[in-house]
Length: 566
Image (cartoon, rainbow, N blue to C red; front, side, top):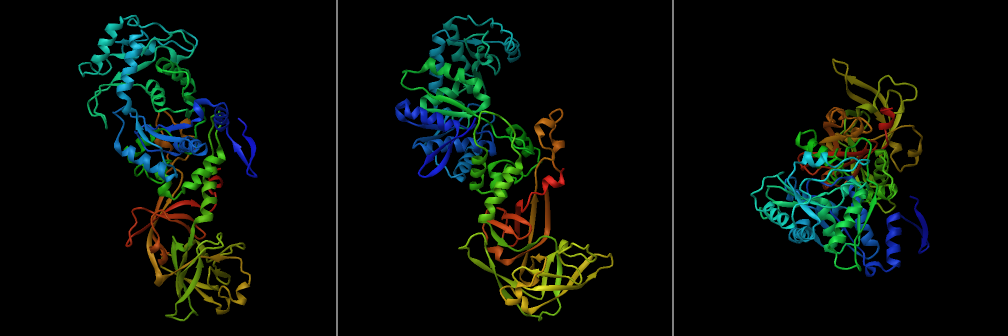
């Protein structure tokens, strides 16, 4: 669906189809000009990037049109739900920069939903079915073939009421009976073929304990909860489009006036390449130890992205870029990565870190001398502060930045060639020292004292610039290089027999333990945004300590995945 461009305060803005519909409702005075949305997650897992898209539209619509967005936990299945997930969801929403109007739970409405169900039974529009789930499924028919009526469909109203009460006493076993709406077993919309409204779950609820044994199904609870709360626009993903007629049907059965009725609207889900979004699969990854928890930086969860070093602003920018449509598809994860890279370029503090060090000795630099070099924190910010990095005779450089026998177009350190040491001097390599196995132990060079950054001769052109840290003024650190969790573009499509574990990328995490970083990094806090110069974007991990610095790679400076995996 094409966005519409309009003028507002001298700038162009783009309205998506949901905003167009909301503005139309407002112009027509529907619901008294009130705008109320809700974000209704089930507390059975952590929010992922797909949920972020829903969060942004639910809260964004309310924010844009001076309405309110409530947070409602859809806690109608006590087997899978936990307070841990409730707390995590709240934290993620706040991280994205939103505030809810109120916090509600579907369990707040269990009594009202129960009363609604009794009303529907009394009207002869619902019945207790004692068939098994398999028998009910067989009678549903197909989209082109009508279903078969349950043998219990014409059960007397009073008997239905009595059995419904017994469903909640604990005397009836799980699966022994359900409450079904009596609608139309020949309806072309399969969801209208006597859907289940209530089932029995003998499991303690995280809020209501053992008060309830009969729990409402999503299709019954969701619309009624919207109605109770006064939601005007119930925005959800496209898989619920076929449920919308049933959503409206149940509300029609219980609404008290024609002056108000929630409106369900659907948008396309967010699917990313090299990623799975299924909560079930994400839970499997966690439970089977294939990742290190829900906030593992390889996970597509918001807490995982946060720990990896993504900013909330980058998530917003990405969602703005992909927009909201009525067409499902899959987004290349490289688009998300490019947005993150662009965002971090503007906010990350530049620091020096050597992740595969080799010692470099400047043989003509005075022993014991230490110079304090000024390093700008972020050259993209004209108002950026700077910090000091110490320079001395013995440095660490990247092992990959030296080659003894280099090809013609090698512009890093090699005997006889000049390079610049960033923020410092131009040096010329004079040789190296090897151990008995032929590995490089030390690299030697000489510096030109007239080429210090900022001096007149510092403008002398050299083709290579290397980063470094002083041996005497650097600290050891662990660096975790995170990459895409899956090695195939569409894990959901390519998995065989439900086994997606074989599709995991074996190189999704590499841990480097002999890295050296400038001591300025002891001043960083967890989640601070950093750029290790010439390497990539990083942040300090939450488990880091002053005596054990741990850094997570957020993303590389350039997209190298496409070239490597072609």
